[in-house]
Image 1 (tube, helix red, strand yellow):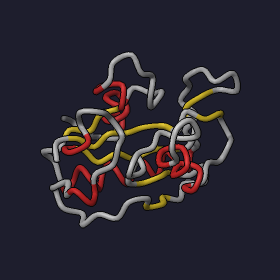
Image 2 (cartoon, one colour):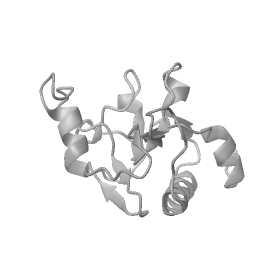
Image 3 (cartoon, helix red, strand yellow):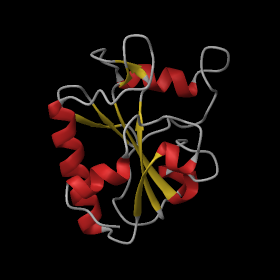
Length: 150
């Protein structure tokens, strides 16, 4: 694994998203979904800070075929993808909408992940796919705020 990639659901501020919704978005055939075999993220950070596992993994530094998610084309075989609910304002423009509970849960998750795998680069989706706003905040600046130097 080379990357931990942070995403947002690109949904309006304050609107909860279920794992079932994300699965539909990703795995339903077009035009209702993307037609992927697997959901795009390993873990989902709900508005209340709960972290829900969407794809099982063995918590090692390898991305086994059964663990691979579809978060960023060209990077999926070497990345773990995580997502927080939100990322847009009410007009669907990019905005950092992380709640205090999401910020805390994401901080704990990322610090733990970095402690276990310090060699893995932590990035936002936009860092791998320029032109995208996702995850609607500056991941590098946030990492410095929480004490992670890469």
